[in-house]
Length: 133
Image (cartoon, rainbow, N blue to C red):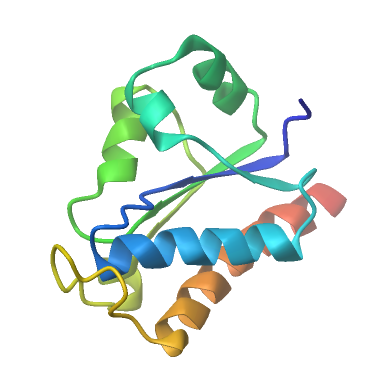
């Protein structure tokens, strides 16, 4: 297993529109950038402090945490696990995407998906450019 340079720690809760958007956007980022550069971290494994996953994430050059709403679940998992992160995106706070509540899984627009994807790509590019300097 090759560890990427940048990890995405995403909410990815499929129970709401905003959580779903974090997963959709992360997948689009993975499609664009090579697997050597960006990978998705396992939020459940980190929440349960699985040793192999903890070690893997601690060996990343950069960690970007992405939450769908103000509950900040991914950020709380990172902090609880003493994982430092280099960038944070909260869809509600930073992108003003309203969480519609439970069972709103598919209630999002393509425009919102594109905005979230662009926000993550921007942060990935910042780290990639810094590495190349």
